[in-house]
Structures are given as C-alpha cells and as structure tokens.
Image (cartoon, rainbow, N blue to C red; front, side, top):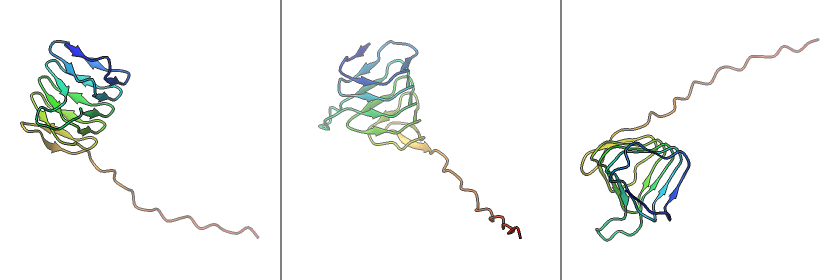
Length: 123
C-alpha cells in the first residue's frame, strides 16, 4: 500500500482491503469515499500532469485505475477493473476500459406549480 502523506484526503475514507492501493501525492479525495484493493489513483504516464480529484461519497471498485488531472463528481460509482481517464459528473456510474458512463444520476423532478389559494378579505 502506498498512500502519500501529501495527498489531501477527507474524513471517513474506507479501504476495505489495503493490498495494492496507491494514491498519488497530488491526489485530492473527498469525504466518505470507499476504495477497494488494487486501486491506483495517480498521475498519467501519457504526458498529462496532475492527479485526480475525487468528490465526496465516491466508490472505487477493486482493481480500478483513475489517472490524470481529472475530476470525479460526488457520489460517483466506479466499477471494478475500470480505467478512468476523463471527467465524470456527479452521481454517474462508470465501467469498462476505457471507462464509460453507463448510468447517470436521475434529474430532480420539479413538481408543477400549485395554484395559490385566494384569500378572502374579512369585512
């Protein structure tokens, strides 16, 4: 396991099995994240500088790799063995190599405006 002390990590980080977890010193990890074993969160060897920023409540499955200067939104779920190299919006589920969004967070449904009750003037 290699978690650099310079990485910024929010409270509530859970690592179920510590084997093979690597976190880059430039990585930023939000609060209440869950990281599986054999996960890499780091810089890309493909010339892109910087490390990922993970939002709050992110789940990273076993064997996943999140690399490059990218932003992973709040509540994102990254499936096991997924390679993520691009920004992911809040609430999305990502899987595959390369990672692709397979499910997005449902949009908030606005309820129709209710008629305002008329007031009766007291006479």
